[in-house]
Image (cartoon, rainbow, N blue to C red; front, side, top):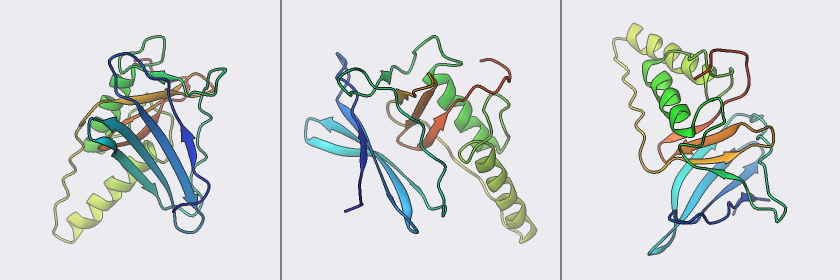
Length: 171
């Protein structure tokens, strides 16, 4: 079992299954982020991500209500720099095309990820190989509001993405 998990549980919203996020960090090994969802057959792991960097990027503070529940956002939530659906689609397109998107502040899951895959593709092509990435949205988009008002969102096959104010082009 991973040590000291941090868990964020959003309130149940009518018509949406219950879900929660759990994050654990074992220094020198990885930080694991899991999304669990209640199904008819019980709780199931629907998304998981591992960050194996020696010093992972700090997690954003998640907004909570007075009872301590995480503030969830629908995939079409308005009043943000972009809806969680727009954010996930733009993020997957940037990764798939290996092109940085100026709407995202630079970070390990945005610009750094694009630069990594672009460098990896170049190395493979020099060795006579071809790299093709497939980033597909599968499943429901899950998003939590961060304490600074930004969304943190992802899908089962997409790494978590957070839009931070950067003064760059709006959605």
